Structure formats: structure tokens, C-alpha cells
Image 1 (cartoon, rainbow, N blue to C red):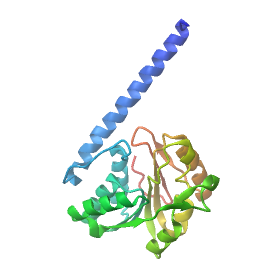
Image 2: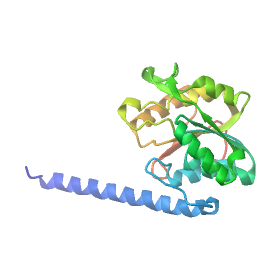
Image 3: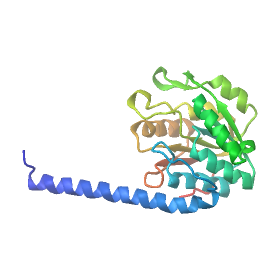
Length: 236
């Protein structure tokens, strides 16, 4: 069935908007790669699962401007390398939580070859049933994490794991904020990746209500959301 002239125009506008948005995404990430270049000492394997460069820049900006030094990230990867490279120059420590044992081994080996291993504690915490999870779901083994971070005052929490790419696990990242809340310093930042997805959008709404904080969303700039407990510098 042929489209009416009105529907055809609407379809054209939709396609143009999608293309324009994609171009803007790519422009943001190309520029971000230039910002990241001083920290890139070796070839890095970017994949579709990697955090976008423009999102990484915002993470690093928060570390520098707001002087974050006790950082926890859920899900290790390129962000681990860049954060470790930055705190090697500035001081601080990164605690990376990862559920995949094989990936943990790869990360540890890679960090060691780059002389970054002493700035990162990789916590291997397999996925397990969590009382904090939505719909009786899974999250990282909470006892393993508790033993590894006891006594910490976290000033930056980056949530990019565990995997939440389909509808069966779309709320997998929800437990992060309620779990780490008792470990957060008074002045902290929380960053959630992949906010272009429905699950992450619902998680943001729950976190805002439960933590009484506001998340600023950056769909073009990295598809991340950022919230801060104090009047810290918000890196736009």
C-alpha cells in the first residue's frame, strides 16, 4: 500500500532526524577521542559494548574537576584503562567490579603490561540472586563486594554493568545505587551508562526518588546520566 503524501513527508523527516542524530553522535565521539589521546599509550580494542568516548570524557572530567579519588565502577573495560591512567598521574584508586572470570584475567594482564595494576583493585564477583534486584533478578555477589570495599568512602560510582542488553535483564543495574549508598561519601557523583535504553530510564527514575538526587541526561554526549549529591561542578 502506497503511503499518503503526508505520511511520506513524516517518514522523510524521521529518517533525516535519525541520520542527523547519528552524525552528531559520531562528531561528539570523534572530538572526545582527541581529548582522550594523551592517556592512550597503546592500541585499545573498542567494541560495540564499550563505553562511548564522549561518555568517558565526562567521567574523567568529573575526576579531575571534582577531585574524585575513591572510584568504583561496575563493569570493567576501556573505562578501567582510562581511569587508571588518569589516577596514576593524579592519585587515587579504582575498584572495578566484574563478574566474568575470563575477562577479569584479561583485564589484570592488560593493566599489568601498562604498569597500571597497582592503581586498580579488580573484584571478581559472579552474578547471584540479590534481594535488592527487581523481579527477583541477579546482581554481583554482594558478600564478595562488601569484603573488598569495607571502610571505603566512595566519591564516584560508575555503573556500566552487569550486562543489561535485553528485556530479560533490563533492570540488572538497579541494585548499584541502593547497595553502595551506605559506602558513599557526602560529596559524590553517580554516572549511569546506556541511558538510551528503556531499562536504564526506569532505573534513573527509581534512583532519583530513592536518593533524592537529580540525574542530568546526555543522550548525544555518551548516552550517560550524571547525578551529584553536592553543588559540585557538573561537567556538561
